Length: 447
Image (cartoon, rainbow, N blue to C red; front, side, top):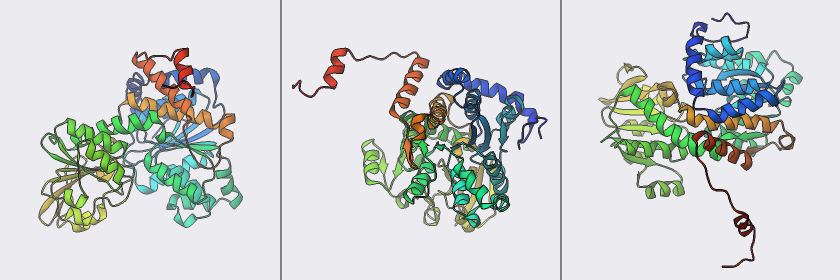
């Protein structure tokens, strides 16, 4: 589907011009990443480094790929979700930037893992993940757990010698992880003592999760729901499962749109915070009969399941904004339905359970990317600035000393990104005087 000599698997190369327009539009509000790209193009901190990225293939990601390329990196990009790929963006990256992309919107599971295979076959020095599929696959290979691999990966790896398989992992200097779900998986790997290289938790950066997760997810999740349903939020009851930073953002935006919001939580401290933020807090079994719209943002499995489906009101709408499509028990919903699933709108499929209609959006996948365009570029600017600088950090002298654990982004990097963002927004802040700096560093000044 491409006339380019760059290895790729994309839907339609003729969409490249359209993709360029959209990427350029996103770039207008990604000034922090733009400043980093300018510096990278001069300093070339990633010269000759092979980077394999498994991220959502969107306009914002395209600008991150351009930045890595400007820094000298040899980049391969594959999709981290089958429904989040923007085919015109994939075409632009291949045709006009010469970047290998393996991503097609709506790809099936086999093709998804064929694309993971292509990213791993690049033999990266640095990986970038959104959900830890690249790192997880690498470690399955390193641990000889070949039976646990998806068939396309298993077929490829079985043709490699054991030494060759080991070298795939030993060649990786480090990785970055974009999302909460991926961090959960990576911390479990570290706790089990199997993590083979350091990972920088971009998601835990203050300039990522306080803004991307809260403001980006909050806005884009409701954008996806509204595009898929055109439902009125004002006066409706919205059930938000999970009150992490993503859940906080969604709950706040839904309330701002006039909805009554119920939060479900398993952590008592977080549930208390939701209650003190003014939200009703209840278990899902109590929320299920009254909710009009259900949104899952927990990173966990089967948050909405059979006992909830059986008591939902007629016309209830369910969507997920967590990374994987496991939060809603879709298989059981399908089994319970007394009629064949019926597409009632684009991205909306109706099931009938005990005579009541339940509408599932975007196959239970990320609603903000499957039915909308994902987060606004202005907030992804900071997230992807973290990604670019984290790659540079992993290759630095300090990065070389990191142990095989999940690490936070260095505080000075967080502050620098915030400073650059303020500059881009035209905002000045105060600077401590010498007297104030002395006072804050002293213990003997008294009251």
